[in-house]
Length: 196
Ligand SMILES: [Zn+2]
Ligand SMILES: [Zn+2]
Image (tube, rainbow, N blue to C red; front, side, top):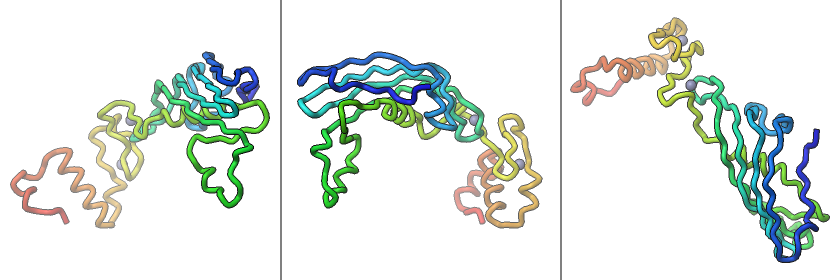
């Protein structure tokens, strides 16, 4: 298995553009994210524009991954479209020790030699393409916070574990949950009374 996507920068003339439109199979995917197996080959379309010693890499990545639902942890297939954007500057311009904070500039890479590995940036684009909240369905009920029961399967779950807990905070949560779930509290009362 090849863990790199090496681009030969010499292929690009001094003010030229290299367009790469390709895909790689799912055999690369263990590399990406442990919790996100990739379901489909990763397609990438990248343009590398050279300006003398500098290169601007820009493009997008498309694939499908599996990510756990944020609420119930069920695996959810996700279509991912990620953006790739990297600036390659010659290591001749690399900041010295005392200017080291410049190095943290996002998406700026100081390259050495005449080759550039595109793979880490494609993987990063996929990672950044995963939304912060992934839901198996819009109204996913999630898991019971006490025993982990999937509330999609047992919507009427009343947790025995919760009743064992003497901690007042949990009782507040229970009350709140009942209030929202069943509208038990008279709206007039709810308005004037805070839950204790
Ligand atoms: Zn879910
Ligand atoms: Zn429970």
